[in-house]
Image (cartoon, rainbow, N blue to C red; front, side):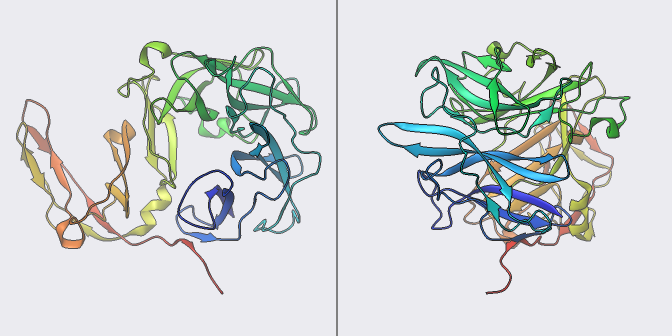
Length: 377
């Protein structure tokens, strides 16, 4: 069973302080999801102003743990890091969670403003046997440096901050929702890169993902992770390219199509593509263009294909597009008023200066996935 946790307001379709819980859904195929009751709600002194972003980690013995940011507000807003465990680990649906009274496990650091310390990552184990997590922060006051801090722990309860941050950026202002993971390279067996034990060491390349508040964009940087110093060095000039979406990848927030991630043959570009399970939604096969030519600046309509085709996955207001074998990925929020049913179409276009011949193009109508359908009363 796959579990998905997400920020959720059970009281309405608004996002804000004091009303954030953790929604919880389960799936057997990563395509169709059933909604369960909320996993975390703001009920404790260490999170009464909201249960914000975090992550899940599988501990020894197969016990999952949730790390999350609790938001509390007294004289001034304070963000802290908390942990929760399943009430009944034998329950495959993990429907109830317990927040220990010893929370928060990581209090607000003295050199970080109260509202700039959040989003703990999935934990991994280093060569020294210690757990590690990364947490986003702005170090040095309101005008401080956007940082991704590293914390280490022996027991998943007592955490100590590393002397060096994983990564810093003066251009970002503040970063959120960091992630660090190994990425498959050409010639490296996929099975070697299991994330259960965290980022692999040595020469394996890694991707550092950051959400940057200045641009409201997500960035994915390929680089090298030093698992002794716990630092990350990207392979591009980050300060120069912080706002360059040609170098980085941008995605909007939301429940996107699950995807696999790997490096291109040259080892320089991150590629992403929907998981194979998405193909189970394919129904009627439609061939729109075979051997057609698209002139420079031209556009050809794919006859018989509406918006619900696997070249674009549309979920009411979200459009996801993947092209070039995963070299180009775009997720966008759109609110079409007229492009529905027969009024929606898929086109092939050519922005180049020369003639392009379409040797083969295949498209399928997609069945509707069942996402967060509440069963029963």
